[in-house]
Length: 292
Image 1 (cartoon, rainbow, N blue to C red):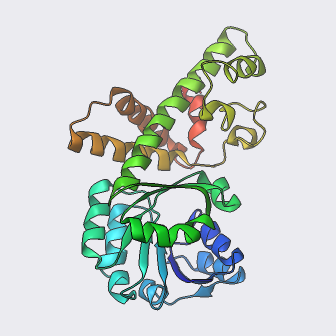
Image 2 (image 1 turned 30 degrees about the vertical axis):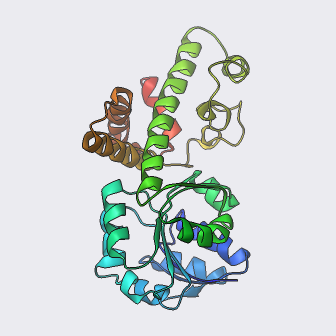
């Protein structure tokens, strides 16, 4: 079993670290929020006094942080994690950040580093069924696979540094647009007198089928585990989807790509979040589309 440092023990990082502990790994963790560190300790983890302390002596060091500036500061700045880590350690950032920062940090870390953002939300983090989209050196990816497998079900090497982040923003841009049009279809069905179940039964077996429909249906009933059945408690918060859509549009601008539906999805989620719905599951946008 491996010795692992884990920094960022929040809604995603906390359950991910617990799954590493369940797999028998020795995990030293750090978080700025005392309650998160206490929960980690209660699960059998070893609390560290700082990010650098969590990284020191570990064979693998994992971060799950809010944004690119936090990742850069943790590894290269005041957090001092890259310098504190062993020369042979594999560094793994599971945060969702911009491609440029992922590549900058990987180039400056002085250690083999993977960008490995995830898909699956808090439910996937708890269940250990996340999808990892990984960028970075093949040798480091091969070494990290057993660690990632303790936290996820699907692990895909997407290419060099930044490729994991590129895959994540493309995937979530598709998901956001798909959820919006799925919600629009249910709103239209309501106005046409069609029941939620009838539309689901048809679309889930026809050309309108999608993950947004069959795994995360935006209305209560057809998919019992979807957030719609618990008043749209996340899940995957709308504020996080809004962030990812912003990253997708930054990437599109820098790459010279035209993404009109991605841009429209960002505009709609901006309205939804600015109306005070940032902590609502992203499928809750159906409420705004109903005009409520």
